[in-house]
Length: 179
Length: 138
Image (cartoon, rainbow over the protein chains, first blue to last red):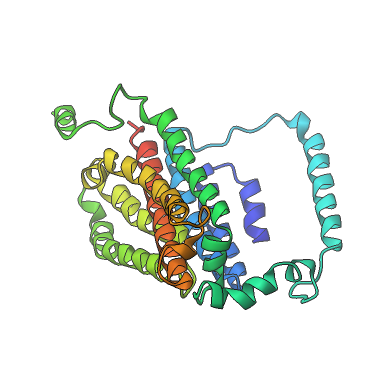
């Protein structure tokens, strides 16, 4: 993943960059599988590696596929900001519990109740699904609204640009255009 | 465009299985990994593959704009409607336990419907975004 990330930062051909981000997502999905987070891996593979690659390619088709090189004078400042942020993030991970530590705070709060009681309360083998759809139903409703809003926003910005009323030409109009 | 014949044949062969797998992920989310989000994305990926290979015009003949727009709103409405139905049947908002005779039966039904709403909205949103993006290029 580090090699792919460096390649993404170095390349200027955005088409190759989009393909590499797809590969990066796929490697991330594999990492999630290694961490036993199959549901997250599934989402990462489908959304990160699949759909966003296609949408980025669509964006490239609308714009241009070569990166415009930035002026060089801000490079030092940007490097300082990035290094500082990375150092703060690494410093933050020092306080985190070890991976799989059963005494970690996240395993002490509501997780035992979900794991212990969801079988009797919900009756569904996949605990992730019962948390996502039932215990955290409000959150998932909010996420669904986010996706709805995203599509509505795309429609509002791009959908009506060609003319009033339709975002696509009717079949007859297309045939007219071909003639 | 005859030079794409391999892609055309292979994708024609693959798309039904993609849609079938999406439905499997959708309805099997209770038991294995998966659920509405993933199923919606895979379902949309089938249509997007069709759109890439055969053109957005043909895709829009299969799923017209009004269909995806209706489904886009319909999925959210289904989700919120399940919550309101729980309220009407004497529970609180998004409490599925009152939806059926037994609490676990109600939870099963509620989660199934809610995941269906998520899947429908996600699939419609992805198809809408893809079709809108790619029908701009000319």
